[in-house]
Image (cartoon, rainbow, N blue to C red; front, side, top):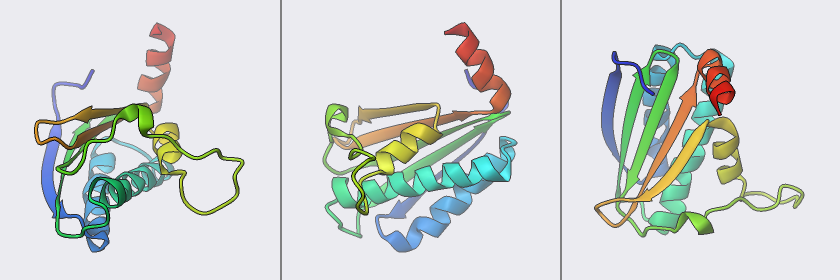
Length: 149
């Protein structure tokens, strides 16, 4: 559950890789506002980079002129990232990483996202595309959540 006092930033970028540094900057500021340390922030940035890259590759088939929306919701020791595309929805049952024992480049972005974030949800949005919600809790909140489950 997100705390009452939230910082929320919404931005839209074209689906071109040159905008990844901008997305990463916005997410980094959100992680800073949530009180995450540098190591965790770097892991979150890697997960977001993988997610945006997957949108460009899969939802937009590499087109670099489509819209990607990002909501960054920073609470005390919690960060929620909503990534919205307007491309082709991909059923979450078909979103998976390649086996990690296969040594070859690519195909592990989903694994990085799921191993970094505490909650990952893919939902078909009103535009026919996908909304990817990623949530990361601070250490104390993650431990408390594990105790209640």
